[in-house]
Amino acid sequence: MRILIIIGLFVLAYLLGSIPFGLIIVKLKNGKDLRHVESGRTGGTNAMRAAGLWAGIGTATLDVLKGAGSVWLVKAIFPLASNPLNAWIQALVPVAAILGHNYSLFLITRDEQGKLHWRGGAGGAPCLGGAFALWPVSIFIILPIGALVFYGIGFASLTTISVGLSSLLIFVVCAITRVSPWSYAVYGMLALLFLMWSLRSNIKRLVNGTERVVGLRAKRKAKELNEGSAI
Image (tube, rainbow, N blue to C red; front, side):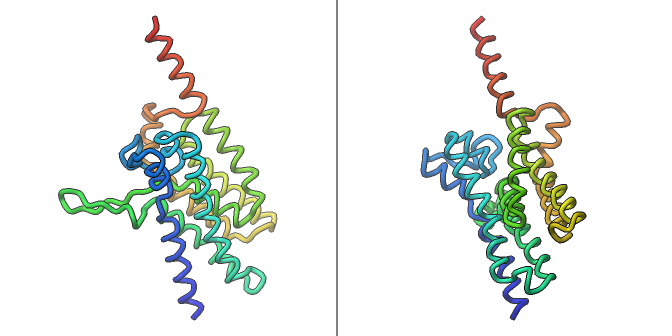
């Protein structure tokens, strides 16, 4: 029975992660198909590009709850106090939510050759949600770092990577200091790997210097273009 419940939790987390909140919000706000806007991803950054700041914030918030909700559910059913091994279930189930977000069951398409393509986001928001639910203090570290990278350095892809990397480092330190179990550090490692895999095309553009900018850099670039066109 325990095994069936665990399998059910993984499936439920994947299905929760698969809900394309960004696609739904943008469609309701202005009728656009988010899959055909800029990067084509369904996360908060692309929703903001397609339908404005509040659409992006709403999408990001709901995507964070994908990861957090899956952990809260597991903690309610398999609390750490009743069995130390439950920490592994708590740590691995939110990974399923990230996979669902990045490779949504509801966004599968088939090309002319019959090959299946999986669509979704990059995984940063559900990764943050999972980390927050595992150790709530982590959000006060991850969010400021992410905001600094987004608005200061100016790359959405690096912001997403910073969320995964911060989660890994936080849980490694917590494991060393015995604040949380090592299984949580494994969550951080797996989350970072899946985030980087989903962003491999962005990483190539970062290396080539062709990655699109966001935040303050995007505003400066737009201002420079406007000033240049006015001359």
